[in-house]
Length: 298
Ligand SMILES: [Mg+2]
Image (cartoon, rainbow, N blue to C red; front, side, top):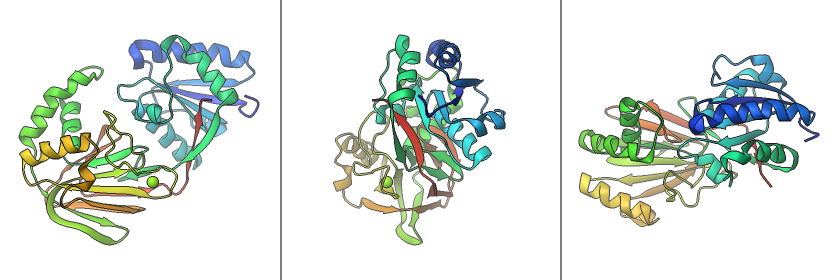
């Protein structure tokens, strides 16, 4: 813990059925007792006190992948870098938490966070941006993004996996198979066919099937996987192949790696980043020029 004198906590108080608030408050008490200064900011990264984040030796994000992205983005904005991040995962999918191997019980969150600050190791991971919005795991353009956009449109409370069913049906009904053009580091690698495109920093995804099984968050490159779709039936077939990790062998699939990816389409197609909606094509996805330090529990 000696290396972290001052910690900022960015917490979504509603995450984990209110555990977000309880955990932040527990740390607000226990960290000073361990000699660490702490400031808690509840769910207001946009308005978060810039001086607090500028002075922090480490930032704890309590919530889902969205809270993590907001915390990291805000640090980048106010200080031009990102201090070591400790994630206390409390969302639905928790893509980054799963990648980092953080599986904590609700009652042990505060204690495990303190142990991680004290003894955790730091890994430096790549991150990326889609139209300037930071993400850590992956961006998707296609049906998956349409489902997430539909979910955003109709949801009225915390997401449960069952909530995906209705948006998925709506997305499949309304999805338009618009041809995509994909340019990687200035080179057109795919043009003029309807497709789903995935830009992966980390292979782990949503339900756990590897869309880009070879993606590594420490190689300074983004993995690009483009799966052509000729019809809805084909799309569903491809989806199940993806679930089996087989789609990269599918006919017409294009796989590439690069630092700057541009995706264009004749009509706007939905984009998702780390399971949250992120606008529409055209989109430019680029590797963040700096790596992000994550604290990994021992
Ligand atoms: Mg990579």
